[in-house]
Image (cartoon, rainbow, N blue to C red):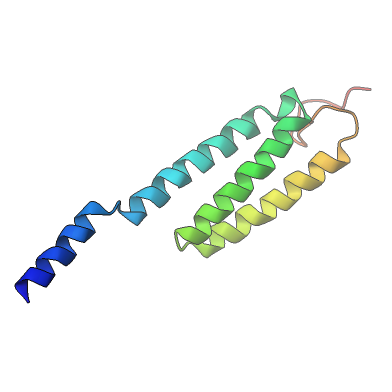
Length: 103
């Protein structure tokens, strides 16, 4: 009996901790999302990258068991994709930008 418990404990020590893997994934997803958000004014592709970051962050929320976070990030993903589609001028302008849009 003791031998089988020792083998189970050894197997558990050899496997990476799933919580740590999910946390590292979450840090990467959120960092990517925030960098993309900061660069949105540089072009439309960053709005699309922000949408991808939101989707990755949403997946992290569900994997981590924080489903409300996952739902909110999924909504932000949809909003970002709609912004990407509606911006026909070729540059992403935030609704919080200073001054009126340029012609």
